[in-house]
Length: 476
Ligand code: BES
Ligand code: MG
Ligand code: ZN
Image (tube, rainbow, N blue to C red; front, side, top):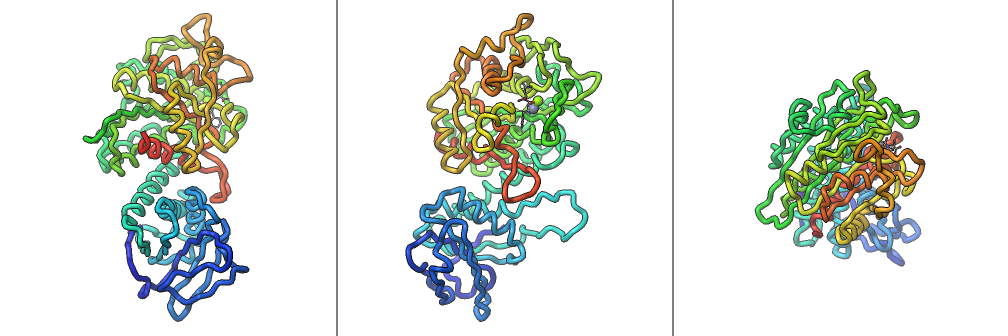
């Protein structure tokens, strides 16, 4: 989608999108467009309302969009996403967005982002039906007096671009999105956006001593990939480390899942979030240094799979007793966390993982579970999330929970075997591999990475965390 900033709509023909903040009385149709009066009984800008009219002589179709009295970023984004997602046939190659002075500049970003996000379709493998529309050739003209309208709109597009990539990585099936697929994606994207990328295969991971990571990988024919990405910026004063859980499919291993296995292609949601965020950080040229570690494996059932009661090693040197092979995410994250902290010394480390059903049990699909030993970081994450509706909410990591993970035979066990505090005890397990880093946050996105929405009948990716991370980095 091309962006084109204009200052008059006289010659424009085609679809005109006009967002309205709700008013008492009749809305004012912007000057320079068709002289149309819309009665307040029909449309007054109420949230989630729409009104469509055609002016045949001017060859314009107007969609009036109601944003409500105090429009929020995410409601505006969703309102615009709905248009391209559900009213595709109204769109041709040209569209015009009329953004009046009264509306906050931030919401222009949300509108453009939403329009572009709405072009996503789940039918990646469909042969039948109509061919997908080519949105790449569309031009979005924007009529706005905002001085930096182009910059704002371009940023909206970049955010949506990264989120679309994340959607795809999660929604594509696990026989396509293998660990190697993710490593190739990272390398290709790295070249395109200026991020240096390397990836360790099984053999190299053995040499490096990534033993906990390899224990999960050993039951799968698919070559594991331990991806390392580096983005550097000359103006940076901070170095952020990111870690994302990349289990491309979680069968549970020999403790095989008896419920919900069909959704477990989403278990690389943390990886997809970190990969998408890396693209966006580089695309926006944010003034920070960022290193990302993305351990990618498949948790498969095989005669070579690791066993419940196995004792495995780890990159940190700690030994781990395996109580349950379905608690695999924490094992690959353990190596990811100690590897990034020992080798790259980031000022702050944040991991994203679809880690526990318990996080879903606690918060449902409304927010992610946040664990952190850094109060300032925790607060900034919460604020950033609130601004764009990618909410995170803290749970405690008190040491009272620590002994739950004590093992009689090894340094630590991977599951306490009890039906309570699952998300917290998982966080306590991870903490043991953070080398006492003073600024660490763990975000359990099991309930927010993948789910239902008005945009598809099947569960699908949300790209949760991509925008949240950018918001955070802009606020640090
Ligand atoms: N990948 C799952 C967690 C998950 C659950 C992700 C729901 C997305 C939606 C994780 O690996 C897992 O299996 N966790 C177990 C841990 C338990 C065996 C200690 C869980 O939460 O039940
Ligand atoms: Mg599991
Ligand atoms: Zn898992």
